Amino acid sequence: MAGISLQNRLIIHELIAEYSHHVDNYRGDDWANLFVEEGKLTGIPNPIIGRQAFVDKARELQQGDKEYRHSISNVYLEPGATDEHAVVRAYGLVSDWAKTPPEMSMFVEYRFDVINTNSAWKILEMQVHNPYAK
Image 1 (cartoon, rainbow, N blue to C red):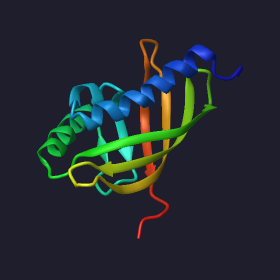
Image 2 (image 1 turned 180 degrees about the vertical axis):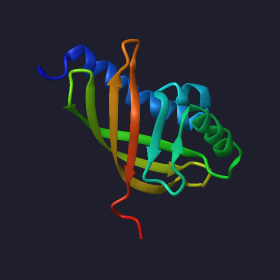
Image 3 (image 1 turned 90 degrees about the horizontal axis):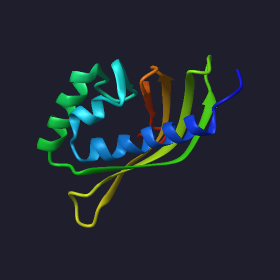
Image 4 (image 1 turned 45 degrees about the vertical axis):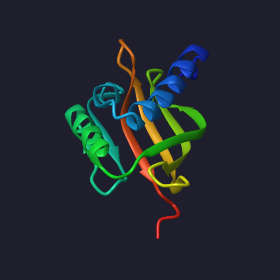
């Protein structure tokens, strides 16, 4: 395996950046399309599995009393098992802008398993780990 090409690194970084914009703006279809058909978001109280579940969750978030904003930083990529797979690790600050002033909700560690589906890079699974949960 030769590693992750510069072009693929840029594409994957864009994929991770899109994640925050889609979820924070309740664009369920766009959020869901970042994942493979049976993609997963795990490490949360109610894991999300499958594209329709992401669409439904976006609708639920929009109707809730929180206005989350996700800031994903310190993104780095590791080669996966094949040239068409990568592991992305990052930190995430989640804040609630429905409050005045906005309030930090949590600081988490992310792990994204991503694959090249030949049409686009997609998320297989996104794992959320909250090392500071009480």
